[in-house]
Length: 405
Ligand code: PLP
Image (tube, rainbow, N blue to C red; front, side, top):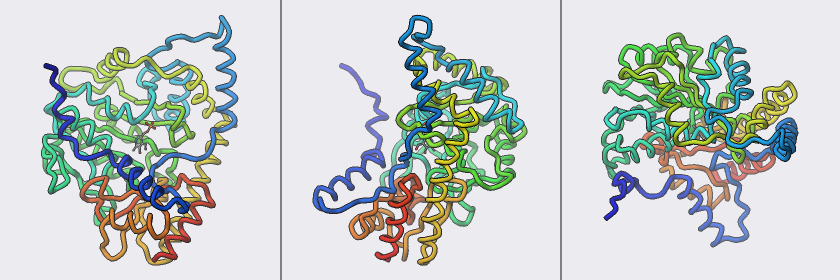
């Protein structure tokens, strides 16, 4: 008789965004006249940049010829893309990353989950609280999280690092000694950013204890403030303790195109093994590469015109973030984030619960947000709003929320 992975049976309820979608659908079905504005799931809405489209068209044409046809590509990504990433995302910031340290993939979501394959099941994992649910659920699936404690909304073996108002939504080094530390800056869901000093402290800690930092920088393109590190590898010592995840999803509107990359430095060794080699082994065994056409499209963002075009879209979303922050702050709501990130972390009024405030806004303002409690116990009392909507819809949503309050 087949046995299933028992860890899957421990996973609570449905995935957060499925539950949000379910509630929106149920509301729409009951109120077909309602025009719901979704500031919930963090998906982009602006079309791909013309330079990307042009590059993809050209690549499609190539694929229709004997000379230009591409079958299976290198699992790690084509050299043209790995070299462009090394040059423009790293060397341009004074950071040395070799193309062979860059692994192109179909998403930071997949990589953040799959990276667990190269680590033992008994490692102690630390996550921020609130947190992007993928880190928690994938560790639970791998048996690293223990049991889900329903009454606490926590997993028994995970180390939770509260990110709350008093610490500026930036985690403090926990007293338990974790082996794997997930950090995400700019942060989803709080929109917070760590300072250089805070990242230095994490790198020193990881090097001193032998931990590995799994640094998710999917929203790097949204950093606006000066002297904020754009990559963990700007921090001295990070090459011996960190893995970085980046994505074209939010940087270039690739959520439907699927392209991302993970950087595993060659110096990073643990337990007598080079993690770059282990990840290479994992990827070459279980992954067959990102489509050639998509990689050509991704490479186009590193051309001067491609760069200018994606920066225009990013500025558009950043402006939405300002509209949300300014509009809701003006009526006395406490808003965090939205400066170096496309997310606004909104404190619920009068200590209201996250899901209650979610239901209230859906019902009274026809605006869908994401309840903070869905991101972890410390997210209770907050809602996440995204800046990825259209400018007009965003303004309208803010006006509707103001009217309700
Ligand atoms: N990492 C974080 C923190 C995210 O919020 C998201 C998407 O919402 C991802 C990764 C997923 O990125 P990708 O589209 O590359 O899978």
